[in-house]
Image (cartoon, rainbow, N blue to C red):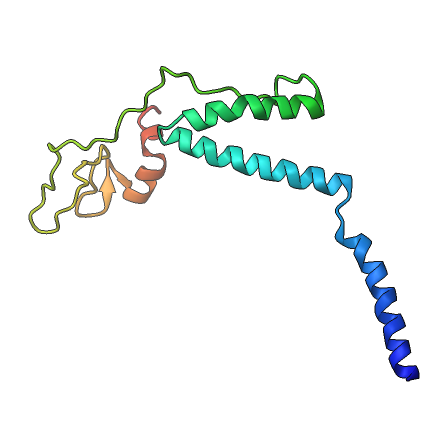
Length: 141
């Protein structure tokens, strides 16, 4: 019986110590509230960048008033709504581009503007690795 009473006393003491630690302090509640509002605004911002600006614009005034109630009037912390006239152009692909090479169907058809090395590995009398690293500077000497 003594073991049972001792265990009960330990459980009561531990639970009485653990209960206050489960409650959040004012600072912790403020951080949690700020993170949740920030995350919500980030999701609405992503939606607005996707083309639907109304949820973000309607939440901006509420968010700004919440910021103003905590930090006062600070223009650097305030969000600005998207202008209603901003309409994003839909993504389009031109049909005029097609692969040129029949062998590998590669897209990159650009030509190098640097001169090619000759059979001896020289460009303009200089070794190709020297010319390609500092060659254009050599032309002005």
